[in-house]
Every structure is written in structure tokens, then in C-alpha cells.
Length: 260
Image (tube, rainbow, N blue to C red; front, side, top):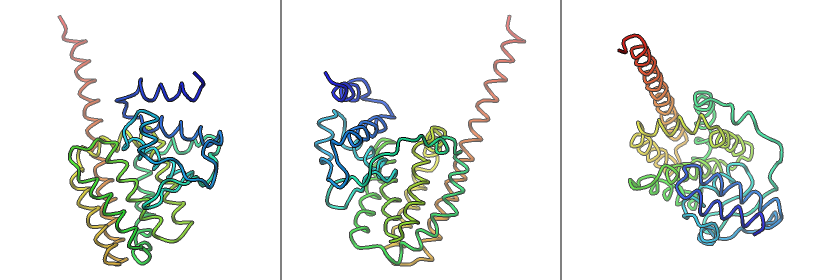
């Protein structure tokens, strides 16, 4: 068995229920792109084919491709497949791993509201269809956190592309790459989703309505409201964790001083 086959076996057999599974699939696809299996400028295999080869579900493959799209490695085109844009960079991106959830939320608040405003006047009908599909996926109450993340990433990256501004799109990509690469951000966002699942869905419905109406002012306000809510729920998650830690310390002290 060669190294590629060994990697596939590890993905398909040993990690079937891992919440980080999409990262392993993305890493494997990056290795294949580096090896020239998927050359720059070519179209990658369909999601269903990749899911069969790797022994994972299509939502996992979809989120892996979205992660590569956030990195700027591939472009997922509406009604088609993912196309390889460039070779992966070899240098580590330590700053992405070090960003805190609050820093990321603040940066997005500053940046993405204006991006939404620009998207509202440039969005195409095909992009609106893709945004609607992402919201429909977010509505699924039986979906996993990975499903939610894939739909959320698709929504925001489609909106960024709709700005028709390469610099703005790259800025949003960089923020989402930090979001996906930072273990602390991912853990905190997963905790925060327990609080704001329904709220976040409602806000994305409002953002979509503003984009459909080609209303830049409403789109900016909807995104800012969404991100302000995200900051509040991150703070709630931080508070809950601090309370849990304090209770654990007190319980440990009680057991130490009052044990018999």
C-alpha cells in the first residue's frame, strides 16, 4: 500500500466520527494537489466521487472543499465542480492559529458589513440561488455541526465573491481561514452555536433578503447585527466556561479541606 492509499485508509476507517474529519480530507486533497494529481487550472472530481474514494460523506467532502476555497486553493463554481486555482503554500500560518475568537469577531464586524453592502449592488441571480441553498442547508435541524459550518462558509464566501472586488474577497477569505485554522476559535464557535443556532439562522435569512432586494444599507445593517450577536454569544460562552472553571476549583477546595 503506498502513502496515498494509507492516508485514505486512515480517513475512511479510523476517523469515521471525528469532528475534525473534514480537515483530514482537506489535508489529503492538498497533498494530491501538491503531487500534481489535480493540476492547477483543472476541474477536481465530483463530490460524490471523492466521498466514495475517501469513504466519507458528501457533507464532509463539501466542507473540505470549502476549506480549500477559503484558503484560495480552489474555486467552487455554481452548477459545476471545484477548480484548482494555485498550488498550496508550504510556509506555516501561525497567526491564524493564534487569533482569538473575540479578535476574529471584531475584525469581521469591521470588514464584512461593508463587504455585504458592496455585494448587494453586484450579486448575480446565480449567486442568490447559491445563497438560498446555503440557508436551506442551515435550516436542517438534523444536520451536524460540520453541515452547519459548510453551509455557513458557503454563504459568506459566496457573498464575498459577489462584491466583484478581488481585494475584498481575499480579505474575507483570510478571516475565514483564520476561523477554520484556529482551534480556539472553532471550539468557542461550537459552544456559541448552542446558544445562537436559531438567532443566527434568522439573521442569515435577513441578510439574504437584503441582498435579494439589492439594498446595500439594509445588507450592511443585517450583517453588523448578525456579528454583534455573535460577539455577545462568544462572551456568553466565555462567561459559562469561567463559571464552570470556578465551580470546579471550589469543588476541589471543598474536597481538600472537608474530606473525611
